[in-house]
Image: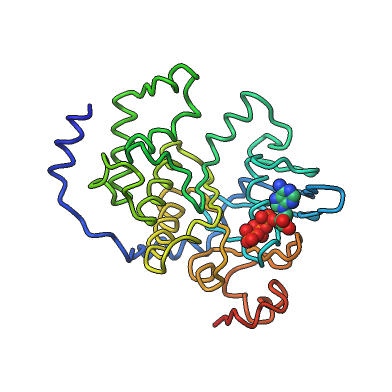
Length: 289
Ligand SMILES: Nc1ncnc2c1ncn2[C@@H]1O[C@H](COP(=O)(O)OP(=O)(O)OP(=O)(O)O)[C@@H](O)[C@H]1O
């Protein structure tokens, strides 16, 4: 398989990093159509200790194929909220309804199945540095494997073809056999996205995906995330520090302040007054046009 893939990648013309995507008009129009709700977060609380109440009665719906950003000052609870959605962090109380299930009650097989439906990408990529791009992407399938298949890295030809397709879609096919520690931050994040995509998720959680990237690489990553939500109908939930980036790319924004939702609406509605409500005294540094 490796040789097959190598010869295929040789015939692939070297492409420059894609920068701008022009979304078709239908995709723009689709934004006005109300998408079905696929997840409901109800009365969610997280207390790390008796005195550290980080999420306070969080309620919101998540819709199919939307790009939803979560913004708020440092310590507002953005990462905690994102990570309770796939139970990387256990909520203290409340419900997260996904399909017919309450995620907060899942155990064993049910929990593993839910995690294949919800992919995740991270600020620091969480890749295995000494492994190749190809191997890291295939690792996204581990949730579907038994432990022996996982240990032996047993993947079918079909799975390898799918990995190649996704790697090509993300524009990193020229790096497929490189170790991940030879890649730039933006390329690493694209590997992270490819690893999430190969598991066929319904939702991708992105915990500050551009916080370690320069503006150009950040834009490329945001364009890919937007494209994934538009073209694949996957819901993308992104924690962001940059209000302007969130405004530009989101279908909807949630503003968190001290563990409470103080804004949940379309980006067009966000103005300086709302930014002040979310960021308090730090809002002066964040001018919103
Ligand atoms: N494991 C933990 N134990 C105790 N407190 C925690 C733990 N993890 C986070 N916290 C606290 O919970 C609060 C919210 O943290 P969280 O990381 O969710 O915020 P955030 O909005 O993502 O912040 P940032 O933008 O700085 O990443 C902070 O006060 C943090 O110190």
